[in-house]
Image (cartoon, rainbow, N blue to C red; front, side, top):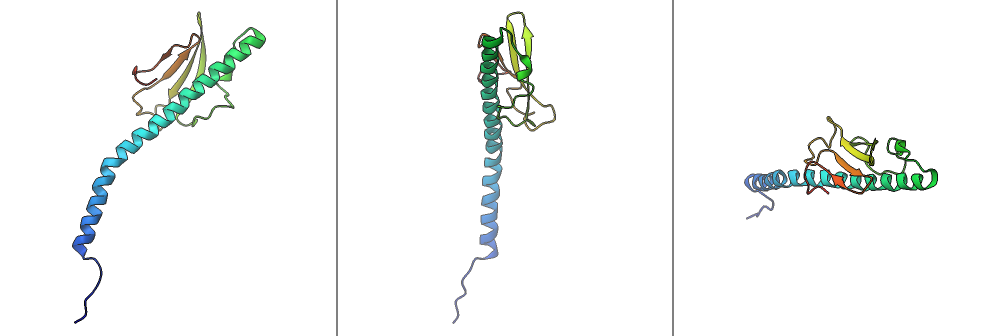
Length: 128
């Protein structure tokens, strides 16, 4: 009598079904993790821009707001956030705005900002 080795079709289908269920559970969590990672990188870039603005102000007694537009030292993915700086009566505000049709559009925090006095803001207070 010859004994065959291997897996049956039912065993294979069960294994594929288990992998499918685990993937369906894990993928949304992975997407949230990716969004949060890019958000954190954008926050770091906002702080880098703020430091560059303050350094420029120390040297030239003015804020060069175009530093945010052509940020050569920033690490954010340029397809996810637009970095800008705008002038206010109390100084400036640096913004990281997700593109409306970009990969960060579903981020719950929306636009991130930091002000000259160090105050931060976002759509949710838990984002910073």
